[in-house]
Amino acid sequence: MTRRPTVVEVADRAGVSIASVSRVLNGKSARSDTEDRVRAAVADLGYLPDSRGRALKLGSTLQVAFAVDDVGNPVYTEMLQGVEEGMSGSGARLLVASTGHDLGDLVALVASLSRGYADALVISPLRRSPELVQALVDAPVPVVVVGDVGEGTPLDTVRTDSRQGVVIAHEHLRQTGRRRIAFVNGPTDTAPGRARRDGYEQACAAALSEGQSSAYGMVEASDFSVGAGEKAWAELQTRGSGRRPDAVIAANDLLAFGVMRAALSAGLRIPGQLGVVGIDDTQFARVFSPSLTSVSLGARERGRIAARLLLERLEAPTTPPRVERVEPVLVVRESSARATSNARR
Image (cartoon, rainbow, N blue to C red; front, side, top):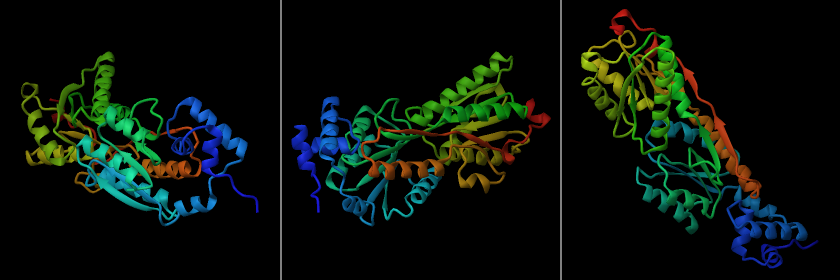
């Protein structure tokens, strides 16, 4: 039997360390001359990853970490289900990590990968920092990001356009006769908070250019929760010189539920007097009463894509990083039916 060349021989031929060979073979960033020498050595020696080792890695011992800020948020639950579906048949075990809102905890989690915590990582961070992005790029295992870590970052990424999602929601509410459309956002130091704020501003500017003033104003909630949505509705009542909004776009479904709960408790009719649209289209949007119109950002589909990208990265480590996108889709339900005449006063 012909002996297979080893990683050690590749490193000797390329004149680099074994660690450098491993980085290049696993698709991690390295100096361009190092990448060229390693790839040339691989070609010269006819090196191939050990298929038995690869099969083992894709077998029952493969441990994939799924890291999010708050695993209790239903959007992450649906994303997790998508990752599980995408991993089906690989023999992988999924480890779930809920890190809260502390960027330091996220960086520490990524650092722990070097100690064998997991063989691969799918991560969906709300916030990003240069330290986190660098830690993900330098991670010793394959990483797939569901979210925005900045253009040009050399990582496999699954993205959506939540800014456009808010624009779609705004256009829908205008078509139903709403003209005083408020926006309840989450914290703008998060990637979705910034993108969705930009979408609201873009939509209001577009309406104004068409001769329609539709901006009621934005409330920035403390987080993306139901309780924060209730508090945001209370704050909206202090604005507008006694004229309440006739519609609210919420930056996620949980905020929308909070707004609806507070407005219904105050005696308003939804959708007759107040139209509400959320973002994410979680499973609870279908069962809340009235059911919630929401913009789907394909959380489950993004999870499935992330799993596929990860398995493909394990099979072909030197493939250039890829970015895949899931487009927003409006799902119309009861909460945004056409406004009554009372809502326009």
